[in-house]
Image (cartoon, rainbow, N blue to C red):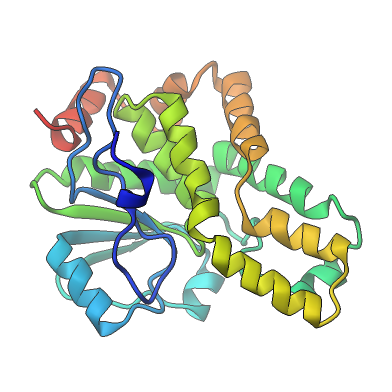
Length: 265
């Protein structure tokens, strides 16, 4: 399998930009390069980043954020790239834009952030907004037939809403769940320095351990979140493959088409 560090794209003005190409399926095939990108928001892209992504083959930008997040940090527009706003939530349940001071006003419970994330993950799997957003993501994926042209899907931090999108896509392509979980958890390594700097800044400003723990729960991914998400799906739909059929609306023919488009021959 391609090294996880090799998945990272050379984007300076953004976080968590990762190529999904190179992952191997249970059948032994690999996902094509320059076809699937997961990332954080595109609001801070430098001109050189925009050119880099354009030359990389970026064709579609799927923005999974709320209207509040999009208005606060609008994506940089890249020439030739088609943009879609597909909000997973009608409000930011993962609190990716929440400051430490906002958290302090919200709750003093040290477990608040963790429980909030579980609530958000349940909503991602079962909410109507989320269902509609991921359905459209797959519609774009099925239309992206030309080799060398990429679909980029993202939220604010590129970890939860984007992470679930990646879980669904990699499952549809036949990637083993162990590999999918590694891709999901790799976010923590990618954003480790960013989160550490924020925690150090807030600690210096007087945030206590309880507040810092809440911040860490909201700003990272955890094996518990991944397991909880799959447990919700298995409980409510039977399996993640059944979920792809029932909630995303993929037929067996669609799955075959996806594998034709995204897997190497």
